Length: 331
Image (cartoon, rainbow, N blue to C red; front, side, top):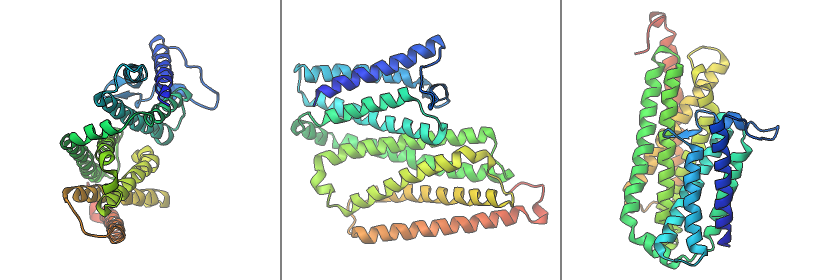
């Protein structure tokens, strides 16, 4: 099964090099009629921290090819090599899922070459099942402190980003509308949240692997898993339904505007509550609360904050439409 690592690395490298060449020569990609490769590879999401995703892909797949060459060629079975391979593949798989979500929810277009890169990552993940895990898990367990630190960094980025996003959201709505520049700021903060979530999940996997038996029966871990799942699904809805129409979010009395505004308030409330819930769960070493009761309390908390968000939305609307406030800013 490990040979799939070589196949996946070569396939992914070929795709990344092809996209890189086409962008450098400014020529169109060969793309099926039902997809829109140009829209995807030239979108604002085609770079990460100022580096083209295809350039990152080239570096990623070259490193994958080298590591898999070492493993398949029998040059080394060191746990450190296997650890690098596992960490690299998990990170690449999460980034690939993120890029697919961007195509589906944000860009609203598909690039077959990008999906080919995702398929290469699937092969790399499958290949991981063929490597020995005894020494690998022992090595991962010995680095637990570092994974806890990285896990907390993920929380800082995600929780901080969600908190600042909500603060800016209500600040930007002072004039009753979100401008293009303000939407761009919100998009940047959203990217920070997704990076934090990816770090949180990747480090969580590293903490989980060496102690699967203990975590599988831990009510605290399972509840945290439920909360993180809600964060992911809620984030997808925010990007699918709210982000593309952010500039149309106003305090007009028309029914479509009101429904969209209420949805934005509700999803925002779910996001911030879920992030703080996950943080609180992670802060306690042990929680004796059974899973069923924990989930019930979490659902009650979500219902409460969503209700409060709708009440707050109505209060703000009434405040903006009182005669004394016409023409003024919301304070």
